[in-house]
Length: 190
Image: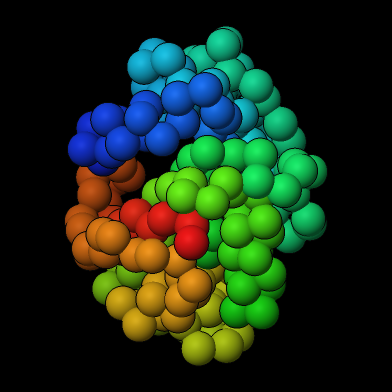
């Protein structure tokens, strides 16, 4: 299902901030957002761990650079090499310590004044596994064969504590079969 026009409100900011620079999209999946980004002229590096999804992304957005990577590993980019980082529903698979390490890597890779636009699973997202039966650590659950972290407002702020958060809002999206509750954030690297 695809009824998630969330990027529309960010496209002007993304184009302006990434003009002449690169945009890193983490967790690109099948390339829905990637195709929209490249159609507006952005130089996108689309990354995901799943090879099959990357093949779909390459078909949806052939102009994008495609990269298979595991977010649990250090990012293969030089310091300050990205103007914009987009992480839509891709930072929730990890323990809190690992999530903090990933955030540190994002800060290393983004340019000063660069923009992070991210969406996080909300603790209100019961359709997609919040408060499932096996809690590994607070708001971090085993959901089938996966692990998923769910964020409340304070945990998003804690994760982005050294960024200048300019937008933070909880929303319901219709990207999947059931409504999905997410926190959407836009923050600038200090």
